[in-house]
Amino acid sequence: MAQSLSNSSRAKAVVPALIALAIGYTLPFLLKSILPPSEPSYPYIAIAASFALNLASLALALAFLPDESDPTQRPIFRNSRAWLRTIVCIAFAFGGLWAAPFQKESPRIFLALALLTSVQAGALFAVHAGLTVFLGTNNRAPKTICALLLSVLVSALFWSREPIERLTKIGGKGSQQSAQFVDIVMKFSPPMSVASAWYLECDGARATGIASPRRFDLVHGPLTYAVWIGSYQSVASPDILPSGGTGDFYSHDEFKPGIVLIFLLWALPILAFCDLLLWRKRVATASSVAYSSL
Image 1: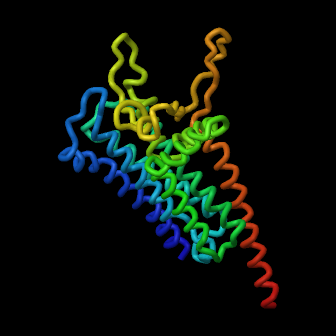
Image 2: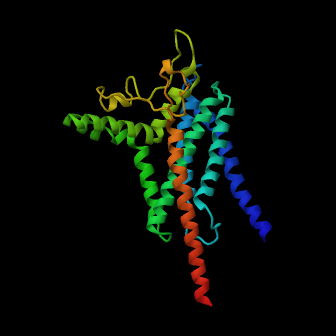
């Protein structure tokens, strides 16, 4: 019986990862027929596939959110274990995308995308665990709120224009608040952070020389986010990976933690602490039920 349960748990971990690998590898083949040929520094197919894999991975994280009232699941660290399963699927998906033959980018950008998507999923699991602690285990509200929150953040590119413009027209503190609003959208909206990853971590961003190659930029330029919310807004692409901090006083190269490290520093402690509280609550409930049955 124990061996069959172990085999079942292994299958639950391996099968989604293999499916993710297959999707990551075959998705560029499907996109090849509808997208223009990739340029040396502008891999259209890999860029479009990375957006699709990011959103699909976050949707998978929603599907993996544990049901705390389910007695068949392992009682300890359910959200953390589900997050690890999601990380494995994300790694296999972006690994398959890197292995696809339609791009010539180095592994760095795909590693950055995998890390970014993993910490975004971790933040989602941390929010779910925290809501479950406060709202109770026999409640569908945590999953519903997580799905709603993810939908709002994903669509922020479209609805954020109006509040940003209204804040800017106020003047004074309104302009400062609109700039903070833009910064929040750039850091917390999954499509915008993926766009920032391609702008900052692709091979073209690290190319040296007078004529730097063209880079994918969803923020600046014609028909992009900076123009959509108003050309008077200053929109900066947030760092994805930690950078700087070389120790050279004269270079003024300050350490920048990046989105990955920032998300990890707040999401991981919250996730672990809330999972521990939920586990202790289940143990206390089981003990009280056993005591009352005697």
